Amino acid sequence: MVKITALQKRYGQGAVILDDINLEFEKGEFVSLIGPSGCGKSTLLKLIASLSPVTSGSLVVDGMTPENAREEMAFIFQEPTLLPWRTVTRNIELPLEVLHTKWDKREEICARTRKLVGLDHVPDHYPRQLSGGMKMRVSIARALSLSPKILLLDEPFGALDEMTRDRLNEQLLAIREQQKFTAFFVTHSVAEAVFLSSRIIVLAANPGRVYQDIRVPFAYPRSAETRESPEYQRCVAEVTKVLRAVNPDHP
Ligand SMILES: Nc1ncnc2c1ncn2[C@@H]1O[C@H](COP(=O)(O)OP(=O)(O)OP(=O)(O)O)[C@@H](O)[C@H]1O
Ligand SMILES: [Mg+2]
Image (cartoon, rainbow, N blue to C red; front, side, top):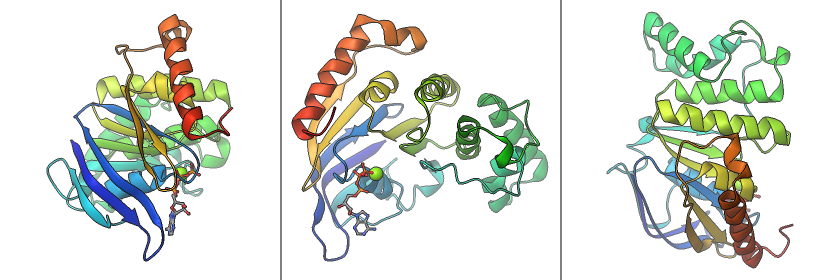
């Protein structure tokens, strides 16, 4: 689904941000990117999403250049970035409106994705009437309304409290059981990365490069109970150790 070969990235004439990245991802993988601040995690997502150009090397998304694969991807940022004057429903349907999707189809998709994220009871609420977790669910629904093959998420739950984050993690996996997308997820939380991912890429900084490519050994579906399993806890401990090796500041 995504193939990265000898990729290098600089912004303008600046320093090398990502150097000699070689990675290949299959359809349906859930990939987390972790590593110290500034190592280039967001940059890598932006390159895949074609929000910034590759400097050298190659990046192929579903057999195409990232630019040509744009319609297959949706991006979720840390801030939900909802329009305050639009209701939950009207925020979710925004991308479809931009694409001039017919209104009956729009209604149908919107109702389905709203239900998928558990916001069926507040279709007409405005963002100011929603909790942080609910706003993020609107943002997820808005991205899913495009039925992306690839979902790119840059620390989407970083600003939420731990319980809300755990619940959203479970919901995200449940949604993925229904809408089979390939996910690229940036986080600073090892526990979150292990819970969600089939694979974790640990990046080192200066320049950003792949330090370790870790397969998470347990199967889907995963649930709240997964967090209690010794297997999960062992994996969190192992990945934490790897992250500490590239980031001495990591707790
Ligand atoms: N648009 C830009 N122009 C110039 N330099 C940039 C730009 N965006 C990012 N950088 C630089 O690229 C490096 C990597 O930034 P990036 O945002 O990808 O890191 P990150 O791993 O996502 O960090 P964090 O964990 O803090 O979000 C940083 O040194 C940053 O200053
Ligand atoms: Mg970042």
